[in-house]
Length: 165
Image (cartoon, rainbow, N blue to C red; front, side, top):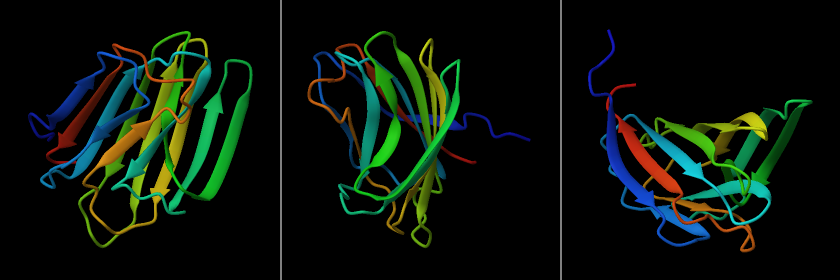
């Protein structure tokens, strides 16, 4: 039987100005999982969103991505990256991106998270990410990865904790 009130809001940011980064710091260690929901646009083009966990910019991130554009199905993979993938954003329309960080406060295993991207008329994607660290996740820094493509005013970033996964 599912637990009631499973998702609990930790923090939410709605940009009042364009910005290249959004940071969630001092994440409490009282949940089993984290869910980050992003509804965002950028000022121009389309590009990946990136995440640094606990300010780690070492070569500790890897990902495998499957995605479809409406006309093609594609895949990508990279390892030993200095930043993780947190989704994709476009100037033409709001994208909905959901990141689920599993077992984020465990200090005996490397951290994994799933990223789901749904952008109308652009892409549907699933990314499996790995952060090779046993540290508990205490902060997330999101970036647009390109100063020319900053997050637009009105973009929202909401972090939730799951009480019982």
